[in-house]
Amino acid sequence: MQHKPITRLKTTLSFTFLFFLITSFTLTAQTDTRIYDIIDAVSADRIKNDVKTLADFGTRHTLSDTVSQTRGIGAARRWIKSQFEATSKDCNGCLDVFYQKDLVEKGRNGRIVKDVEVVNVVAIQRGTKYPNRYIIMSGDIDSRVSDPTDYTSDSPGANDNASGMAGTIEAARVLSKYKFENSIIYVGLSGEEQGLFGGQGLAAFAKANNWDIIGILNNDMIGNITGVDGVIDNRSFRIFSEPVPPTETERQRRARRFYGGEVDGISRQLARYIHKNVKTYMPEMNPMMIYRLDRFGRGGHHRPFNDAGYAGIRIMEAHENYTQQHQDIRTENGINYGDTFEHVNFDYAAKLTAVNAINLASIAWAPPSPETVGIGGIVQPSAKFEWSAVEGAVAYKIYWRDTTSPTWDNARLVGNVTSYTLEGIVVDNFFFGVAAIGKDGHESLVAFPNTIVRN
Ligand SMILES: [Zn+2]
Image (cartoon, rainbow, N blue to C red; front, side):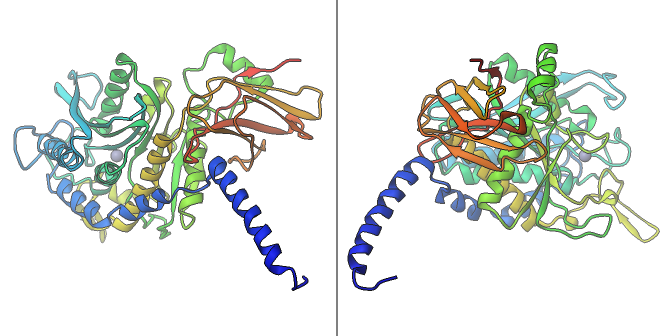
């Protein structure tokens, strides 16, 4: 490079650069520094204290005592409610806290050995622009030991699932310091171990009240880093998502054979969103996309939401320890069985809580996804898109990926338009989707095309 005209070149360059920065920042801001503040604000110590408190209720079995102030699920849910209320008090009443409950009658299944009120504890942080659109974080209140109907033995459930419950309480504390356009729900669900009754109850309540649910991040066991297989890993975690909604119609199923979408349901898009956001803001973590509803033959509380047609995923540790799940506390052949406090890693639980918190925040700050996305390009060397405008969007992004890739690997920012043609890209060889981008750069979930553009 020549040295003489450097000042002038520098000035021109900095103006150009500044202009570029301003335009690209307003359009595409890739990171929002508030997200880093949220990560830093999550406290492993507070999660530790809360897991201890929850484990010290002795048992939180769904059928356990509800009268005692110190033992059983009644005392536990009153304490959880008091924590949400304390958080709300610190933010001028920013949380609506209430119990949502349903009676489940004896004999409903083999694990309901007496009539029981299944009680969830709900805290809603109301969105400023879309009060009826919700992104949900859940943990479970209840615990169990070896016999699922044993509601009196000590059942600390420290990892399963005081860890998810404590993470949810902590996320509420951290996010209550901010205002969001969409509503966030923090919820403790009950009846999980007896047959996913709390999730069923809340999903039905959501339907009855016409809640517009963006999705649920269900946290079930987020504190174990020592696998039963000997692997120790405090960076990896799993995001379980089912491929397509169980509520899809026969027509939608038939259309998938010709236009694709068999691995692009709404829950999968939610999983991809979390994966991408974590890679952006917490690159030290290793999120694993697991292409299934849940672990082999086992269940969790996101499922009742999926059953009702809502997006929902499970966030979970990567390596489980089966001697510390659903076990009577005992020592056998030198092995200490039981889901006790000392097995939980609180720094890891804090990391996974931060994973939740940053995704709740990003989604709650983002505009909705385009309602309809059309795609075309049959026998053409280009892919065409048309989508419905989203109020509040300042730009849109077209994403695409190889058909074998789990993540949206390519993207084109296309400004504030509602149609676009990607020249030179053959529609046959990729899957595509469109996201709306809000003024702070936060993106909606990617909408997979749901109509066909013909021309
Ligand atoms: Zn369990």
